[in-house]
Length: 229
Image 1 (cartoon, one colour):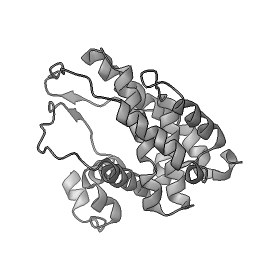
Image 2 (cartoon, rainbow, N blue to C red):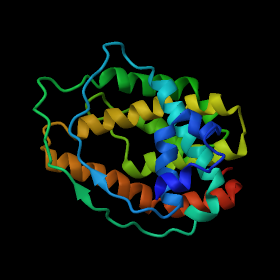
Image 3 (cartoon, helix red, strand yellow):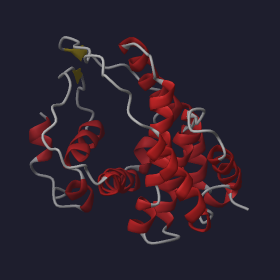
Image 4 (cartoon, rainbow, N blue to C red):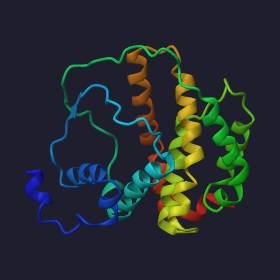
């Protein structure tokens, strides 16, 4: 049914589909009210030794997402709450890693971003968010934390900015990278010593943070100047 819905579409060559076709397919399934499920596939094997360009990957993913948000605004603004989907496949917990990832380079990237991008961020991030980011930059390397709710609001702030274009879109998307690095560092630090069930629960908590902050997104989307000085 999904294939029959998608084949006639003329949007296969849109910028959103070119940026991340997997995300685009998922959003099309949601738009057309297809049946959804989650399948456990196990850990994804590493296929290359070269470090990925995180900034480009993040820009493509968020760019595709924000483009689709523009196209489907009337739809997602009407949705309230969430529903669990069926789960298939056996759960295979990853083997315990020898050493936890080093978070210091991630925290350092966040701090450098706070120093160099403040003048750019102030175009679209509310003053309260900028103040909180500055406070986080003064946290110690091991005590560094980026709350789920603040991260969700930042992602939503960038979505609104992408729509309004206070600066070039590619420049905007790449300005998210140090904030993403900070959130990843916080996630790693908070999950040290956690078992697989706790990790799964934390992922669910992040999802619920996006859900709980959705009224903030809708308010900013409809009245973008309300949160700015």
